[in-house]
Amino acid sequence: AAVVHDPVDLVTWDTVDPRFALTYQVDSAGRTVLRFGASRYYQNLDSFKFFVASPAFPMTWVTLWFDRNDDFAYQVGEEGPLLFSFGGSLNSVDPDLRRPYTDEFVFGASHEVTSDIQISANAIFRQDRDLGATEDIGDTRYTPVDVLDPGPDGIPGTGDDATITVYEQDADTIGNNRLQITNPEGAKRDYKGLEITASKRFRNNWQGVASLVWSEMAVTQSTLALGVLGTFDSPNGAINALGRDEANQTVQFKLQGTYMFDFGLGVSGLYRFRTGTPYTRELSVSGLNQGTFNVR
Image (cartoon, rainbow, N blue to C red; front, top):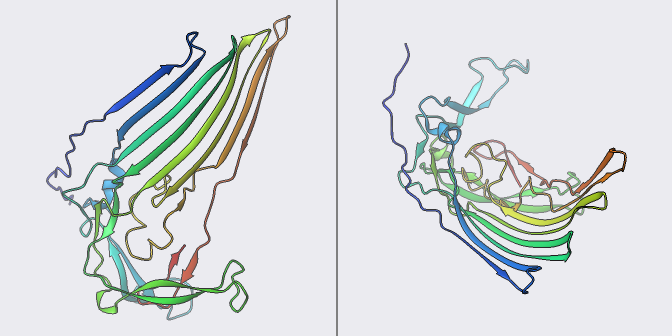
C-alpha cells in the first residue's frame, strides 16, 4: 500500500536583491565610458537537492562485504559490519537554513577607437556564500592518522612519497552518521575574471569580434555538483577541498568575422581556444574503521 506523508513547509525565504549600477562619460564626445555595478543574486535550492531529506529518498546501507564463496558476486549473508547509512528517514533539513547568494562586482570601461571599432574591458568579481550542502550532525567522532601517499607515480618507496593526515572514525560511532542540509562553514566559491573585447561593426563589407577571457575560480563546492552530498559529510571530504573549479577554464579566446562579397555571397569564420578543465589526483585510503574512501 502507498504511504502518504503530510506536507511539510521546509523553508520560507523572504529576501531582497539589491542592485546598483553607475556609468560615467569621460569625454564630451562620449567615446570613453566607465562603468561600475554591484549586485546581489539569491539562488534557489531546487527540489532535487531537497530530495535527500524526503521520505521517498532511497535508504542506503554501506557495509563491509565478505565474499565467502569467492564467486565475486554478492549474496545475502555476505555483508559485514555497517559502515555508513543515509536516506530520507535519517536525513533532515536545518530549520534555520539560509538562502545561498552571489555578490557580484563589475568594473568596466569602453572606448570607441573609430566610428565602427570599439574596445571594452570588464573586471568581474563574484563570491558565492551560504551554499547549501549536507553536513554530518550525528554522534560521530574521528581520530587523525597519518597514511602513506605514494605520490603521482603511484609507487611506494620512490622519491615522491609523502604522508597525509586523514581521519579514522571511532569504531563505536560507526553507523551513527546523520546528514542535515544546512549552510556548512567553508562552503564557498570565489571568482575573478578579466574580459577584453574588440568589435567592429559591419562596414566596408566586413564585421568581426575578438574576445579574451582570463578567469580563476576557487571553490569548496563545485559548480557541477548535482546534489548536496559530499564535501562536508566527514572531515575527510574537507581535506584539500579548496581548489580550482572543475568547470572553469582559465583562458578562453574567440575570434569570429564575416565578409560579404559584392555578388551576395557571405563567408564567416570562427576560431576558439580554451584551456582544459582541471582535475585533481585522489588517494584511495583503506584499512580504517569506516572502510575505503578517497581524499584529494
